[in-house]
Length: 249
Ligand SMILES: NC(=O)c1ccc[n+]([C@@H]2O[C@H](COP(=O)([O-])OP(=O)(O)OC[C@H]3O[C@@H](n4cnc5c(N)ncnc54)[C@H](O)[C@@H]3O)[C@@H](O)[C@H]2O)c1
Image (cartoon, rainbow, N blue to C red):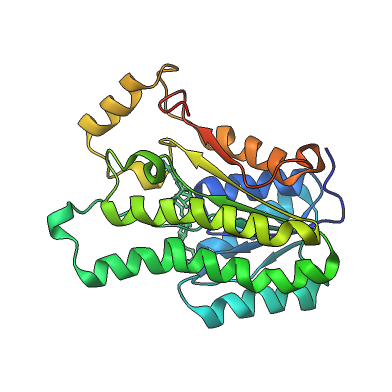
């Protein structure tokens, strides 16, 4: 499935799942905008992808909890590439505070990245995609947003439940303009994000999953590639579980 000529933005793509999605999009022929709050790592990743795949690559750092960063990301992409075909809302944070330890400041910090950031990124690309009459948005939700986090905090879980709802809201609103909006809800994936999970939580997560393994970034990125490609042209508003059978719904 070719993505030649498509222009993609992947938030939080300096490392982890976002980086792997960016690599697969680039290998499919899409131009990729690497964006992350970690500017130096984002630049290193963009250079690596440019060297490995030779396509059009840009690095536009952005902290998605800052609305002016989001607008700069979208406006700079349009100036440089003249369109936006794919937005992957991947950036996220997952602190592991216990319920009783979550302060208002911490609650707001998590929601501002994981939920408010996703909303305003979707809002910012809406007008561009509407004018084009085409586009694709893919959000990274989580199994925690469906069942309540086993290891992840209450703020994280609630933010991801919000992402699941926003995916459906934008899918309905954007369908008349030829724009599809989907989400992936992974179980645990082997990235830096799960390094803080206790051994006990990881054991529970593996033992309860029929496939008895932790996902790797390819498991998520391959599905992401499918959902943003024309092979998924009749799929919108879908929340795709990728969790080794940990949750079947
Ligand atoms: N790893 C898992 O087990 C897992 C499971 C379910 C869902 N997810 C979701 O997948 C996505 C990617 O997770 P990952 O495992 O690759 O995590 P990760 O921690 O390895 O990478 C997250 C990236 O997001 C960036 N980031 C953080 N805050 C940001 C901000 N405010 N603005 C821009 N960039 C920011 C980080 O710098 C980092 O590069 C997240 O949304 C996460 O919630 C991960």
